[in-house]
Length: 106
Length: 106
DNA sequence: ATAATAGTTAAGTTTAAACTTGACTATTAT
DNA sequence: ATAATAGTCAAGTTTAAACTTAACTATTAT
Image (cartoon, rainbow over all chains, first blue to last red; front, side):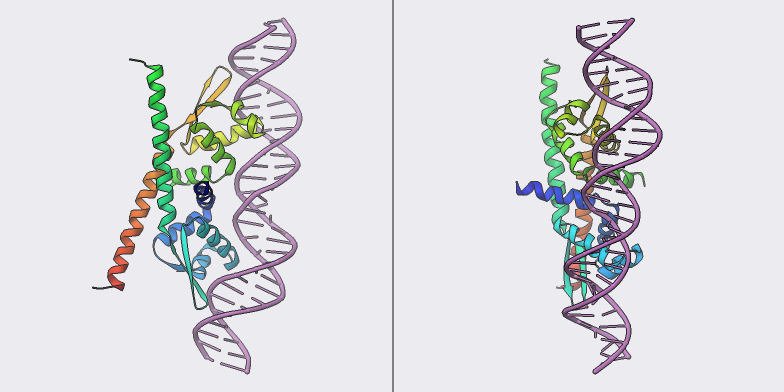
């Protein structure tokens, strides 16, 4: 399943506090690697590693303009997350109502 | 913000491979701590620690019946996740369309 | 009553992954 | 041309959190 790896990458990426912070910062508008790293008190290398993980999860997009890398939100990740949550909530509740039919027959 | 801590707990919980596996296993039906731990090749203690984190994230519910602890899915976590994804996707796309208005005025 | 089973708690160990360093490239500014 | 800036890469260090052990409680089975 290709879909499964996408979900794995998504939860892995947002499972880390600093990456969640980067994501929420980018929600307010695009930023360079430098602009993200500085207020976090983290090296450019460290930030670059986080960005790569967020990109793999399709939560962030980047483009290199001149010597700087501009980072923006990629809505695809959030969309995948919404689909996932919706699907599994529905799967579970249909299973639950099937159970109710057995436990409470009439 | 109370809401923010809920999200933090949610992503932290699902950010770990073993906990995602526990979650997907419970989607198929309720299991005891023992039943979850054994096929994973992990101690009851280790599993108990994961379950506690999943409970705090409202992804799992447990009840102790006799000497065993029954674990089931708590749909509240998935619901919170869906709301979160929907809200932020909308926030971002409204910001994006505002940007398009400036960049492409007519 | 005793043994076995299921789980819990505190404390220590191990490991994955977060983070840094140092050497490097590419771009922009002086 | 040179210096400064922004970022990258490989390799090593550090840390958070995953995991275990050992001693314990509570419940069920013999």
